[in-house]
Length: 342
Image 1 (cartoon, one colour):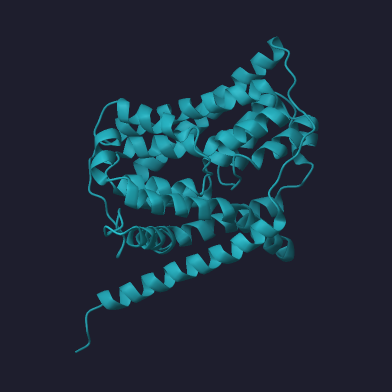
Image 2 (cartoon, one colour; image 1 turned 135 degrees about the vertical axis):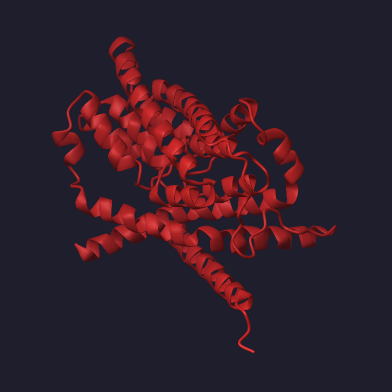
């Protein structure tokens, strides 16, 4: 079982690595291209419009639940409100241009339409909940050495190096440990749950949806890779509504993301985040089962796509180096911050 857990850990870590590295790169680019003043103007402040903008902006972006974390934290430290940040964190990882196309190929047009709509609604609900529960403006408490924007010069080479430094050194320093903890938890879940559990024991109704929600919330799975898993579970007898709950909770949440939100944005924001996922996932699952019973559209097609194993392995090695570099930088900064013995 220990060997299996290690293999599950590596498989999960390798699966998330390409998407997380992409998220780091996007965050680095944003740090030099998007000014803090623009973020504050569009996503800061109170009211519903920053929430609507953040939720709608996140739907087409191809960011998973791990790669969205550095981008969202960059927005938050640039002046985005807590409500807008949570809306972005909820809507973005559930879907994207790539996962919508994969959903259309594997699960049919009904799922391809429902997924982006539920992502948008979930972001709106989560943002409104956080806005209602947590009205404190608060100051951004950045870790030692963390900066919301890279300091750039006028030359393109300086901006490029600043983006690399921010995206691949500073941000991994902030979220590296929560990510590792989340992957460890996901590996434990994958080891303990039997492979045939979903098709053999769950049946129909709200019960399988609750099980999918409990499994999906702490589990790491990206929006695109979750589609063939959902298609396989539907073929084994899982209801479309329960599969949608998995497609929402798996990509939208994981233990690493929850730990980062709790630590960086606050407990109330994390509570609103979880409440929005649970409420919207169950409601959407029940609604989809009703639609399937009344609208006869094909759900599952036999087409399959997954990234190459060599891409994942190389990305995993690079990600390990990036996280270690962030840890070393954090250790050195903490050493410099300690009072001298003299």
